[in-house]
Length: 75
Image (spheres, rainbow, N blue to C red):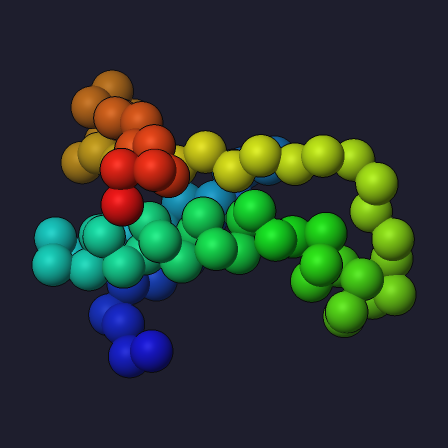
């Protein structure tokens, strides 16, 4: 996947990416794909069995005050 988007910051349990407008939909789908399967990846890479249910949520906006929640089922 050849993207210009870049992960620029992590804050506690949040990931912040800088994305060109034409890549936002692809990055949202990528965040949901990874975030909702994180226990599988933790086990595959680290041998850690994660038994806490995790639910990924994605928000998009030009800045912190203009964020809009993007439901996974809207993709």
